[in-house]
Image (cartoon, rainbow, N blue to C red; front, side, top):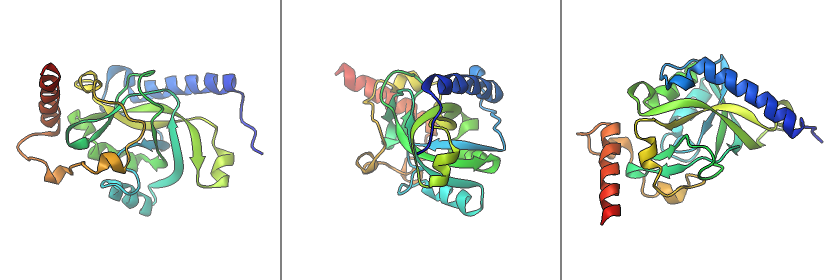
Length: 213
């Protein structure tokens, strides 16, 4: 049976590593020009998961050797995850609120991260990429189970600070499932006269009006 480090030892190690990663990627300044180690981990929780519309990207980077599916995980801390306009899922960086969000874990290189950054519109301010601590790892390989700690740090895409607090009032979900996806609208099928951020602002206004009524 695998022997894990004690909880206190893991917490101390992760705290140090998370601080170093945040300093590396410039998370404290809300920078969207983020750096990443040659190989790192990515946590996907929405339409990038298997069976959903943007999984084609994960298939592509995996087939070209830039990424590798490892298994499943959930966030160590609770975070709000909501569905916004057109049922688009958003993870919001407000720890201790919401759920231990469930998603998929990948090992990725810089090319894969660049592709993900592009899809998520990081340079446009649509999402921000930040490190996150994951636990409850369910890895597909016994070899991976032996080589990884019980908790790891991965890159995840959060709602941008410009609108995050405004959408946090929506119902919180633990996982993006077929139920939420049933009413999801792909980007190509949305009105093209608004940008991603304009869709969000319009949705926020309609939600606020609905609450007042």
